[in-house]
Image (tube, rainbow, N blue to C red; front, side, top):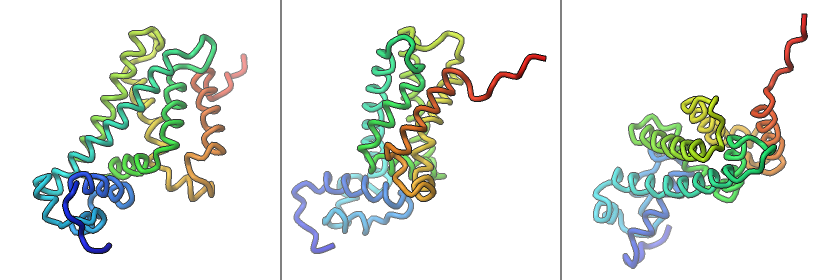
Length: 209
C-alpha cells in the first residue's frame, strides 16, 4: 500500500490499522507486515511502540472494551429509566445496545472475531466483556430496576447471550436474510419478539384438564 510515511504518529496509525484488520480478518490472520502496510509505517514500529504483536493486541482489546463499556453504561442507564409497564429492563438493555452497535460495524466485527478465537487473549476479552455486563446489571438491581426474583448470574448469562448472539452470528444472518444483520428490518421484529418473550413467555400455557 505505497511507501511507508514518516512516523508522525505511527502508534495511532498502527492502532487504527490493527483495529480494522482484526475486525476484518481476525487477530491470528493478520501479520505484522500487513499491519505495517495498512498503517503505512515500517514493521519495526510495532516492536518500538508495543513490544510485540501481542502488545499491540492488548492495546486494541483495551480500546474495544472501552467502547463496549461506554455503550453498556448508556444502555443500562436507559433501561433504568424505562417507564412502568414498558418492556422489562433486560429487553431494554438489548435494544439500547443494538441501537448503539448499528452505527459501529467495525466494533461489531472486532467483537465477533475475538469471541470465536481459541486464544487465551480471546477468552480474556470475553471474560472482561461479561464482567462489564455483570457490573451493569448489579447497578440496575441496586436501583430496583431488576426483579429480586431473577437470579443475578442467570440474568447476566442471558444478557450476554442476547448481546453477543447477533454479533457472533452476524455474517451468517446477513447471508441468510440478504440484509445486514443490524438492519432495522431485521432488528425491529427480533427486538419485539425478545420483549414479548421476556415479559410473557414464549409458549402458551397448557390447557386446563
